[in-house]
Image (cartoon, rainbow, N blue to C red; front, side, top):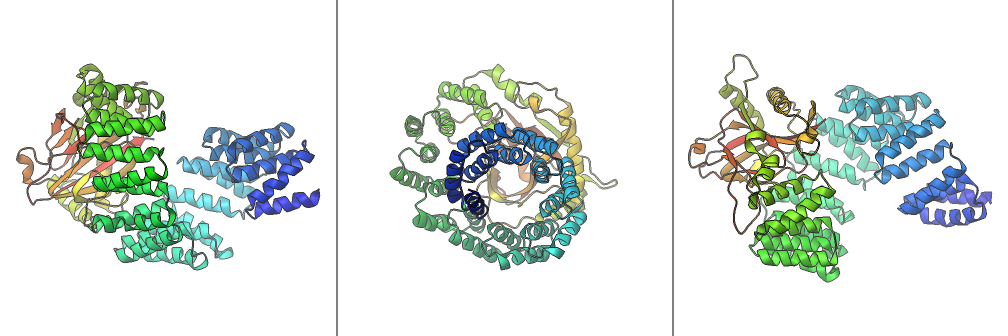
Length: 598
């Protein structure tokens, strides 16, 4: 019996989970009251993604040994994997209370809190873990991650370098050191750490991706492309690598077929419908609608019930002006995928495009009822209300006089005019605009967008603007009272943080397609370089309330704002907004951002 237990545990430790499970099934049949056997069986099942069976057997083990810290902790790992995070945290705390000297739940709690941006609390758990075992690499790396996030990168680096003194090949430490150096612009040092990982583990996908991003920062685009091509050659179903590679090739203004050649070759190797779906989405972003329809049809020849294929085809058809056909395709998809939320969403889109707002309102009422935090559904519900002339209900969501804020920003430096400040700001921002093409997956057309988050910045002038913007954002928030049933007002809080921040440079005929920000709360642009063309027929003006997709009958804007140098505009992120194109050769530069409650 003991020999079989040892053999099963060895299989478990070696990642041979099926072999381990076969033995544990036999052992639990022979010793049904042994909690450790049920515990180990549940662990093997969790590793094999047999979650229902795993939970059942964890509960059986806990019934036999309710105060066993190891079992409680392992059950917490399952709950965390199932996204039942609050329950997982309770289990880890219970495990700690059962045996305070058991290190694993301290580290597990620290990792969850870190993922929730609760860095101070996470730090406390990692420190308590180190009191149990001062040599724990997991606790040290966790603590270093917290220090790095709380702007004490020197402490973080010292901890990681200390780990490497004793464990020079520790990948976690090397990777985090590389990321810290990259964040601070020390690209040669960052590359050194990532290459050190790759020297011992050439298949380290994350290190390869990090190295590729370093090459991109150095504007060594060919080297970055080569690394991503290597990743895809080794792992043809790495969707993120495909995504990043296609974005890089798109930024070089390459032809559509060349931009997405990596998808084509990987699909030939794998015949993966999921990868075809990713390819189809890219074709939609590139406005290659006929090609998108072809890839959707190819998916349906493999799997006639694949919801994403119907979504891609319906989307492409309505953008081509085939509105009734789009409704038909999305309806057909729902026959094969009843109550599929994403297909319902696309059908609602198609109904709006086909001028059937009554049908779309029913869909988006249903979707917002099932998920009140889905801003995309809020946006399209508001469009349906507008089309139906339901002014009262529409204004509750989108009253421009209530929700749109505009103000001129005060120059941050005493004695410096707004013009002088913006000129200094433009000099810094221009250095960051390195792309040749508008982003593939953004609303921007004929212009460029900076990569990564703009705030905080190593540039003093950009950080000075950040401080001024935050004052206005706080003033905007303070003008509202919380309302529990309103999608914007229910999130009113005194503190906030950036969800993203970037600079946009529009060139001749440049504009922002009408769009909304589904992941934000408050959005806005700051205008720091405005051409004289804004005085001609509304060129470059920001307009609100016009959907950004093709429709039988285009809606009129609810509200427009004329840009001026130093102007800040704020509004709820679910508002449709976009700009009218420029016809002059002058450029326009803005800083845009999303914030969320903190």
